Length: 177
Image (cartoon, rainbow, N blue to C red; front, side):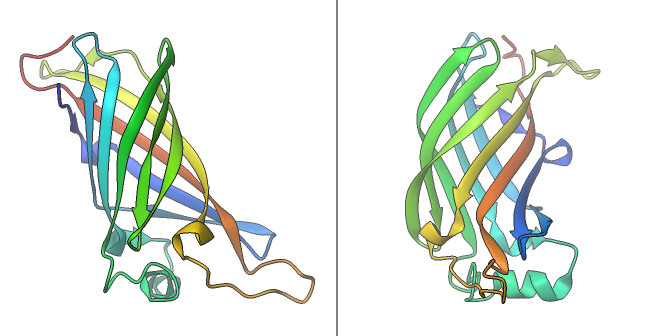
């Protein structure tokens, strides 16, 4: 069954080291995630489309630079996509989701660690499940290479990006498991 993400109670965040001394965090505010669960409530597939234009780090000048051709080039590539290729149920509420992440027209595999909550019924009678999702990736694999080497040899922008997602998903009406 295809479930729906409650976007008002879900988020996609990223974190990158800046000058090797601090972490800059940001979010993607517009996204469409489609999880598919079997009759027992076990995740079997997921797809996602993220509007890169919706990225927000809280600093307009930095956000514009990230949207530019130096990084995401949103004029040419306004979206990034993820499509699972394998979902491993590791027991209880844990999964390892392998899939293909496409950024700027470049696709590479990325594994997601997923931990779900138990299913609950909300006050309106809908079945819901929460999911905490994490991943790490090297941004340069997707052509996000802009950088500067600082005097001490560290990079202005770290290459490792930590991804953190919190998702609340809702079962189709009358379809709780």
